[in-house]
Length: 130
Image 1 (tube, rainbow, N blue to C red):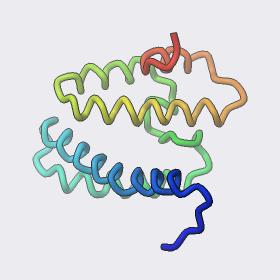
Image 2 (tube, one colour):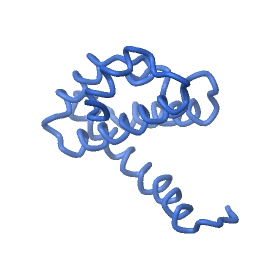
Image 3 (cartoon, rainbow, N blue to C red):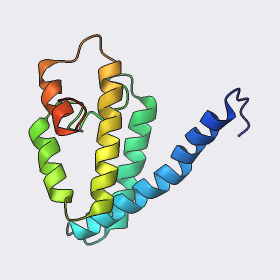
């Protein structure tokens, strides 16, 4: 893949997110599944990650940066808080979860003219709003 890039540091950052970010995400998902009691985490992680990537690349139906099944797209603050609590004993999972949910929330808000009322509780839970 050869790209013409005017802003090489930004291009490099995008490549790093696509490579190192995805590798970190895969490792985090596998570990969280295993620690959550899934007997064969790779058997679940592979299809889950492939389907998620395909949905994210091809979907124009959900807000940019969100998943149709994720708590950010549904503005479900209770689910966000439950996930935060469940990941609290695993610093790597908590860090990745927080970073990805914050990014998804920022993208979702940016894709809308106005954030729905339920969004504010999610944004507060993610530390993006007072």
